[in-house]
Length: 247
Length: 351
Ligand SMILES: Cc1ncc(C[n+]2csc(CCOP(=O)(O)OP(=O)(O)O)c2C)c(N)n1
Ligand code: SF4
Image 1: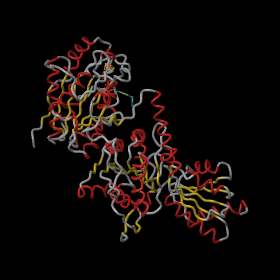
Image 2: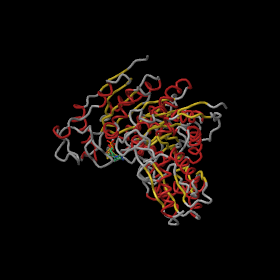
Image 3: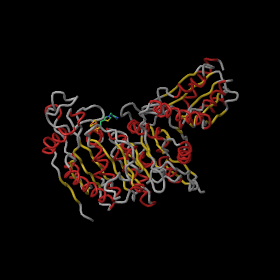
Image 4: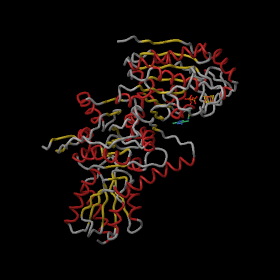
């Protein structure tokens, strides 16, 4: 019998706790597949955030650390500086990375820390029940912007990929999406490129991934994918924003 | 080894290096910055890691990452920095990650001033961050002890898997005294829990999230039991002339040296006065105080604060004798000032 698909070695058999239609699970699998394909499982250290993916240490089958809210890039810095030949990555949501952890992510990028950041942008605080995030779209209804996000009160959604691409320390920055199979394939390629950028020692790397939160968007799984495509992609363009070639 | 003249902040950094510390993560703040500067000069030559972090929140998080690899790592700051580091210290305590945290303390609250102070005593000994936890706190009183306690802090941290703080008044960081350097430490406790890649073993996880209420309670008991062992084994203090003392003065850090001078002077004048100098602020040397309370008629806590350690002295004396307080903040009480205070009390009480 020929095996055509199986669980990557970098994932444990534990069942994901994510809501039906949530794309966190797809992103976990892509990260695990890339680490398997690069043959780096035993050499990898992952850092999970505070957010819906806080339990990622149960799902990834390698050394894991769970961070304080927003501090993952600083923790990754501490690990990577001491163990420079390990593959160190953080997995962070948009509240974690673009709000409470804004200083840590900007400075990790500015210092050119040789780490990889998997940034899951779902335009909302998932874990705490759907409050407004710095990435929440204008007009989007959340529990703390119940009349829709208004510019006069809360300003504009932050485009992290573009923001970090400006830093000289950033070696690879992209924005991808997992809303359809073609984009899932592209996202995987981008994650692999980011991890390779790190292992080549070129500098900081981040893949921002547009992701769904059907539960807090109040949509079914299919409608959530459609909402992402029609609303998020126009504001958050996909593509590579920084690709530093070998030094 | 031959004595060398050293500044307190340099001695603490040198002690850490001698103990095998391989990384420093910090953010500049007076009067602690020389520690960071010393490490910034040394580590590039020694092959260690120095990172000037974007904030104390980030610095302590780097320590969290660094300590999780099993190597000896440290940070140093002053009171306002410890306030920011409190988040990370709570995480380090629960994840049971050993590390050295230095507080070269200044006066608060708020931005306060850069004068030496002991007003971070509560912050240090009550954990400082959220949740039920403690850290070991050592209070040196000389530049030699700055070096020695930095080394000892790493040993205690590894032995109990706990963050250890060395807390010293700003003066101790800034002043110079001759110091005997120590032999370099080369043997370390194995750390099978460290995260460094799961080659030939099961993955390790460093985590502080416990969603099951039963497990959360269990974890708190694990920590609580560890703290009991530390309390039983690690209380340290120096005592002087307490056997016959009517009045026992309690003071820590550099302050204890000033008080010692005052106590000697007052004894010359015929008053039976003793001194207890807590070396571990946590665990507080309850046993030393209890023993003195069997015979002493009164205690006096002298601090560079509005009165913080005096709470612990009262708890330890446990109603056996009255406990008085004398302190200043921003200013350091002089030996004469303290002697006057002691004599006033002795005359009032008739001993
Ligand atoms: C210091 C601190 N503040 C607030 C919280 C509460 N909190 C937990 S998760 C979260 C938001 C997470 O949102 P995001 O990063 O977008 O991740 P998601 O859950 O959407 O994947 C917040 C505010 C916390 N745990 N710690
Ligand atoms: S709340 Fe949203 S982000 Fe969290 S698991 Fe559910 S769908 Fe995913």
